[in-house]
Length: 599
Image (tube, rainbow, N blue to C red; front, side, top):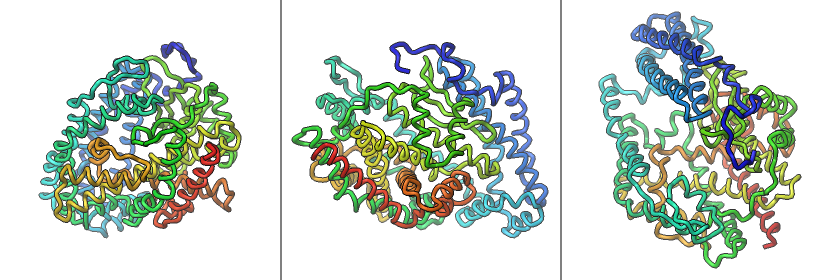
């Protein structure tokens, strides 16, 4: 809770710490499991070249591999979570390093599996599944793997592509070194008139300052620095895009976007829905949001450094953790008694590491492994924002809990495409409950507006940028700094509208985005947000079967392609309907804001 002095971990009550001893009682027990698993990792190599020897050999390897990965994931999760309790402690850091090294050895030991399976006749795998009953549960696993066959090359060419990987990773590595190690930002004067070092980590805090000169100076310092490096970063980004195009051509995909979507079997229409919906609704909705912010802030002109400053202060009252739990379960009651019971169970069984202590990792996350509790790290400080963080992370953990309880190990993990759905659904339910039962409506609306702006519109704009740059390069265009800055200027102008002044420094923002070196990833933030809003809307509107379908979704893990799992739960992302539903809901909340601020 809020206190001027951060306590040492030993002074935090046990009931407020997560129960990692449920995984390993102590470091000695971890070490014993590590030694046993290390030997078993080496033993997996013995199966290389033998997977074509019959269904019994294939099943034997899969069982051995699952046993190793089960223990390995527990070793890795425990060591890292233990290290996050107090980053000053050397022993947990040592264990985390050992676990990382063992994970690398495991990856190398089983690297033969996929190429060997893909080299076998298709009928062989089908016959193995027919002849060995225990292999039937892996039918989807093999079907998904064999689907890659048409894009797998000869052994010699695969070896060559693997070596080329060292070259195609250079742009991202160079970008990371340039921006994290070599790039320096100017000092600025903070709210108290003191000279303050400007860093990427501090940018968000400064961008929310009520002192406009502070946030303007921070913007000019960060974005102006990237603008000065736009030539070198443009060359790095162009190299990354060329790498994407090279692999797409080598593996016989239609284009780089097709390659990125193929693995999760996502049609390009879904990507288009993300980009096109954001474009269509920018003018009627995002432009109105900018106008609202400009009016509430009392500004004559509006710049990008004005988009983060809150238009309502966060409530000052302190919320105890026990009160936060009660607030959460009331908000999540529409999901049913069993969901609320399991939420409370997570608290009572010490899934959660609740409070800050000296040396503890910052932020919040959900982690764990098959066979462990779905743990949550928090740094709870009693704010309303912390309550949202609690329900968000417990959304992840309960999704993991239900998936692991209802799926075999091979399908227990859900995909990245689905990863933010349950957490965001929980946030949407809490928001609706708070809007009906709280006096803090302005802060809640501002919180929601920021979610829509940053998770839907901004990420959709990023997705549009990626598609346009790759398409331009694939048609022979050169990704010069002028082209990239010009495209970024247009995208921002279209998104934010006539009330936003587009500063020259903003036009180089593309140079600041590390996600662009993992092409076509960011659209998943939009699909996750859209699916979550569709689920929450159906649940709150008491649509027939909505809760039951949603619970089936939570139980499905990765047992099918992500879009199929969502479709069975009532959300079809191949249709524009859920995207437009999200926008209509945003419009409704935006209208409430204009009334709330009497504009």
